[in-house]
Length: 378
Ligand SMILES: [Zn+2]
Figure (spheres, protein in one colour):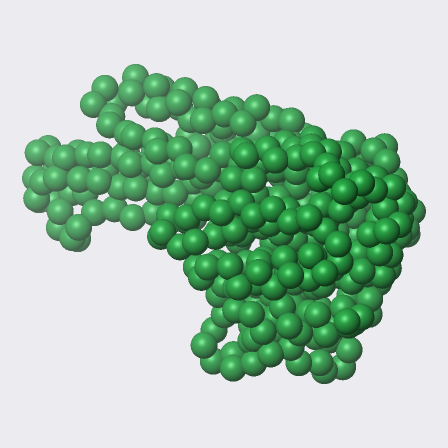
């Protein structure tokens, strides 16, 4: 059965696990592998917002027959992938060219999953003196939904975690959070020839947006020097308002996104926004605005001197870094872990047509994870 990480990756890529599909097939495949290796496996099912069946899977092996509820090390990979262009005919066939392994999910994050299983197999569970967990999640690409569910169920305490994402094998010890809000500004519709009869929602929204831009400048004062940029960033990515060129707009809505540095209070921006709205009401007493807060994912930070950080820095020969996007490390922090994000492949090619992972990095990752399991659990 001793197949290579590459062979295993090829089988994982063959299973289409785009987030909108059920991940039962890939979880069943992984569960069977883990059972063969001597792990105890527990499924955590749920239905997503579209009613599709999803599974998180927790596989534990340790020195005793009893299933531990505390593990020394968890290797965590998400089973879902982003969708792929229908013109990419080989998306679910792993193709090797010039040392690169192409396929949807090859890089994000099936390579890590293949490496974790291969590493566990190479060492063998009989060697374990402390419990090891392999955790496979659903719906990472659509808002860390599976990991959030798992964190809420709180099935195990985790001391150390390596969360698989393409980092070119650099250990990442901190990440920014991710928050969203929809802002709806209302005005009064009227014929544009008679402005005194209306109130433009677009002009009102524009004034509020200028205030939001001031908040963005203010947020720059609070710095986390390990990040680039070192502060909470803010973006208005979508705006929509009005119905016709000769109608004073009755409504304007825009979508705000911000990425808070870890350690900043999660509602800090919303408090600033509330204050800005109050200020605007002083100038425009009829100002009408509604804020629908969406996601408020917190960031994470594992101390620079944590054992898992130090160990992976030494093993990879790379200093630890930070990332400005959300990962499941925040949920692993909730389960108690000193969490580090690390995996083969480059995030910059991850969501593209022609996504790939380097075959050499895949093998290196197997080696890193095997050493990590040995260090923490054997
Ligand atoms: Zn990913």
